[in-house]
Length: 358
Image (cartoon, rainbow, N blue to C red; front, side, top):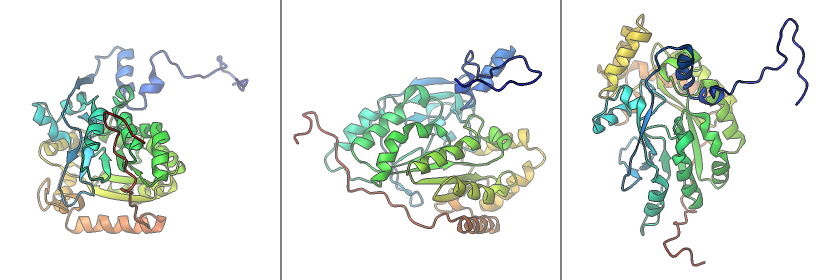
């Protein structure tokens, strides 16, 4: 260990991080807020609980014409990142749980996901298309640290040369570069990092338990350096709160090595709308009315437009302006110059009960 440089008028000669409260680890995902309050003697915050779920199948299918995949895997239900705008929040109502705090704190894990996936991929007649992870809730949210379900699923996809896409807000994805880089070299993997804002104060409010924007950009750089094609998703764009950052986000994405980017205006389906309005009143009361008025101008006069294609792009003058700004920024910084296509021809079904014959 190198000898530290002495600091005048200071007592200690070392400045190592304290491990007593495990803060260096939990700070990554926002758990440090709970630890800090416990240390200070304040009432503890709502803690996360995890329920084991035993589904019979693990691949979800969709036929939506404006979604670029037809199958996905969600290792978890609910998401501890707590993004206020998350369109998946209403799904918790199917469990008779609240799309509000329950969605963030009462989570479900599918520990048999990898085993179920092997069974489904081995079925006769299975037709290969890219498998999407992170389409509903984040596959790298904090509980992945303990459960490792996403990594187990990746192991199956890697073993079978099955193409995959990942969408996440967490830099924990770099943990799996050892699996993703060889797949990317075969044309089998891409990663999309979602970054809503570069302002740490806004990010801490809108996505309270997601890693900081700085950490996410660092993850983009590491993924890109490992040869993994990386997108940056500016989703959602929130009018009067984050829309002014579009150009800077595109610039930083390109500087970190991302090849592609896209954006989606904020969506407020079902229970998300009242949750979002309450959040605005709490954190941005000075502009809450302006934010909602602009969202409604994007959404045909409503809080949400569920129509195919317009739900992802918005409509009207505001949507046109956002698209123009985004496309100009991408051209300026060299993003979206090529089209990424994953290979489907390398797939090898998992070995059956008798193993591989050759």
